[in-house]
Image 1 (cartoon, rainbow, N blue to C red):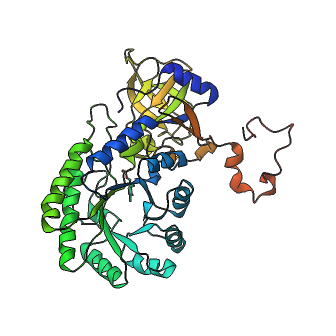
Image 2: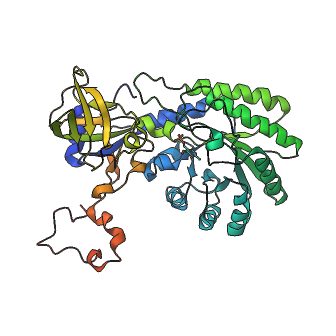
Image 3: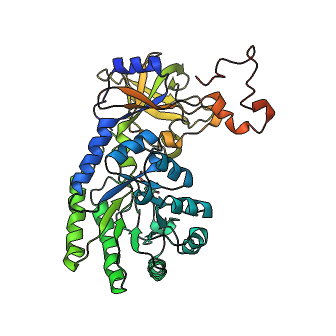
Length: 432
Ligand SMILES: Cc1ncc(COP(=O)(O)O)c(C=O)c1O
């Protein structure tokens, strides 16, 4: 949970005049500091690179910002690759980490010059059939068990991702025989981990493989520690310390690899840690309902931020302008979906709210807008960027009804060139 918001009630009210709530707003300065610190923490590793997990915040302005800070992108689909390409991220600055991959997606990755991360040994053949053998290939490892995992990721033997150890060795051997020039291994064994020891422990696991592979004559160019670092969603949780983590991985690197004359690049694919704390969902109070419980209704719903409904996830909520008021009401904060899990908070202590108050739903900058959907005809909201200079710009407009109908253009009644007659067209039938 972010302690201090990077904006005031007055600023938010002014933005709301121009951009109706709900909307997401991202804090450019926060993202920049986070990435700069990450690169400082891993500066001991000359090839270090963060491939931002595009799935966490697939918005070109965010990708361009991250590219300007030295990041690449981790893509899981052809449309994500295309978004990166149009955002200026190309070639080996893209890591393509997918699973159950379609041939056309391998072709898209190959055409973009991306590095391909194979999820399974059988994928080698599928990739070869689809696009041939690229110069750089990575293989995803699943050790079956791993001490430093957490409940969110569950046990590795239940996870659908990655290859067993014998499969990994076999895949790398075959890739080398087929002439791949650069090889890497990848593993993601926790999600939302707040343990400073997670990455050092994962590094230890993967560095041990690098040592064994060398005995087989296989040299790795990089090890991809993937994503999985958490952020403190709950007020009493503590943020990880990226410098402690960087030093922890460095120590293991020195002990296991440098001392054995092995040098390789460390890659990461974090999403949540990079943008999560720096994205806010702003929503207006539009209802107050008293039945068996007290409800505060807002103009955002689970279709804007799915995590509470999907995972029961906690997101801290601030009533703007009432930060120091006593939290002396207990309410459920709810959206308008016809689903009883459409609740941003349950039994939450908040200051008494009024109609029109702006609620800030915090830590929404990763896997937030990206997981939005259209259930109940709800349209996906806009995204704004709060620049370092204090100026705000829209980086994605809100969907319109026309967007909602876009794939119905197969039906003559919904042909976009034939809008509803003016006299019957509702006022939302515009692209405004
Ligand atoms: C392959 C891969 N890389 C990176 C990530 C990013 O994870 P996070 O946002 O938790 O850092 C994910 C998340 O699902 C993933 O599947």
